[in-house]
View (tube, rainbow, N blue to C red):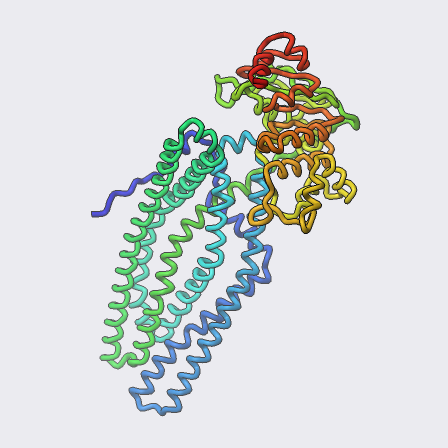
Length: 594
């Protein structure tokens, strides 16, 4: 007995998460057509090549029927050999046209897919951090990863099969009617049965494929969260709980996939039934026509071969509908991101000279009613170095993100040189306020490319000066290829300290007014910490800086220190002043020194 199937599947874990939009069928179709129609030349080649390949496929069954008639009616060997030669020639030509059609399809489809990927990546990178947090990084990763791979695989495998099958079904059906219209009518008895099978399957499977893609995103979210927070998970002994969460998400994704497969097997049995009834109808009609001398044995043979030849393309079409559901769900998720409106950049401008970075009455909550920051007032003047200290969970990273303009505050305002950050174009803001965190990323490419990301016009002298500033020129010069050394995944590996030196060098090349350093030297380890701290000091010299200090030696060199406790500034002053006050900072310093 087949297990019942739920009517409205929903991926688990999505109720509490605001996922990125998913395009409707109409929006997805319009996007796909907009991408394809830009390549009209290759598209015309696709249509012509598949048409000619389909015509060539009609020849062998027709000639085989002709050979049957020649044998039964006493034809000559020469006529049989001519028919066999025609079959061989049509087969060779059909292979050539099929090859050409796939080549034209690649020239039309691959650039379109590349453009779609670029659009999705462009929109994803333009999302603000609050939107990413609401959707979850797993949602984005599954779209640009799993969904993009699904669409790419379909373009290379499913689309050629789909077009070939459609052409073969159309031309082969025409061939049967050309042999004898009565045989054609007998064959199409199967079509309503195929249609009924599709009508049963499509509305049931579509929602499950959409839910399956979302469930895969939830699984990716659980895995990414576990990997990113692995040290914390291990420190608190939560490894078993995290593994259980991943297993739970994986099991839910698996259950949806099994349900989809169960639907598919039931759909297959209906398709096989249609094939059986169609073939029995055609053979019975053919027998009656031959007995009545209304058709030849060769014609019935050719019709039977044609109908049998329909099994593969029809079966392929039916199973492709299954893939179409899966690919359609993936394409809709990609299209949902690609079609997200591009917010117009604010028209704000800044004066030529640096002005103060001011946080005025800033409050922030990730969850309503649970404030992370409360009543923050902070002024950082150009050239001033301010250190932010406090226990874990005090709100330091949140305050740094708000100061850098990465995270909008729930209430309050942040201004730069008197202009609200919300009124500034993103490119202008990033050129004036830079954020560097402990979550470093090594870009794939050469070291030169990694450095010049922020300043494409940087000269050799500029690069050398930046590297000298962060004490990185020595180890880079020691590399066999120097700045042309390829780094990133699968290439030369950089240590955490080296990766942060490159990030600091980029700051020097970008030359912003202010730098927000969120524990930027935390991952270096004790061996490279002192050198990195010296590099950070050098990079921030002469420009405003907000330093989230994980080592209190960083606060000792600051012009001013802010002590955060549970989201509130509880102390403010210089290092010496706060030590003399004997408050919370003095307690932290004593613990650190000990």
